[in-house]
Length: 278
Image (cartoon, rainbow, N blue to C red; front, side, top):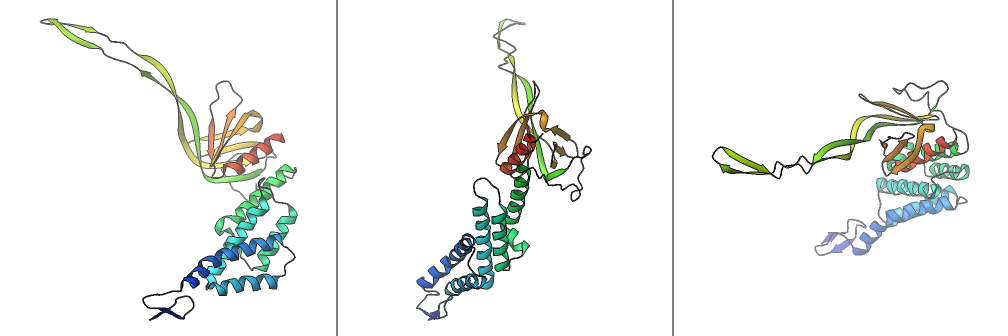
């Protein structure tokens, strides 16, 4: 008779676990994550009480230390999502509560960025600064292959970014050689031939892969074979994609230009707010 792999007690013939123990184990991680989110919404809870509740759930659910830490980290990441809300902004008060929760749970930056939470916080703080007129300057921390204008500052940058353009390709369609048949020996007659007509087809073409740089004045792209600088004043409209943005310049024959950044919503929010301050 085998013992339960969770509680260590007899599990019965041909069994390695109790159904109840397995259920407790499967639900424990979720409960810990929910407890962390609850603690964010209840900032008056003491560090000792929070740790006691997390430890109690982990013990009852037969979680080892790595499993418990993973659940805590996931809960903190969910608390970040709660703090950001629908507008993607982070107030000073909520930022302070998140950092206090981080300290209470003794979480490292490496752990917290496992689900991208630190990056989301950084983006929220940058966006809030831009909206409030406090444009951050990362020029000194980024050594990028763009020639900035005098007094221009880097606000954000995306490495390994892809650049696309909509290009028009012209081709003939409907062309036919017709059919021919023999009238007499050595003489053939062809009928039904026509050249067709020219049509324009728009194709989205991958032009280059490089770095997209967002500054307080321009959008830059710099790659091995293509470099672009687009002033905000020359942009008529922005297009948001899941993984990037598109722009249309103020020109009669302008075609969409796309910058793949991996985060279209943040990128579009950032550049539209920067453009409004020109």
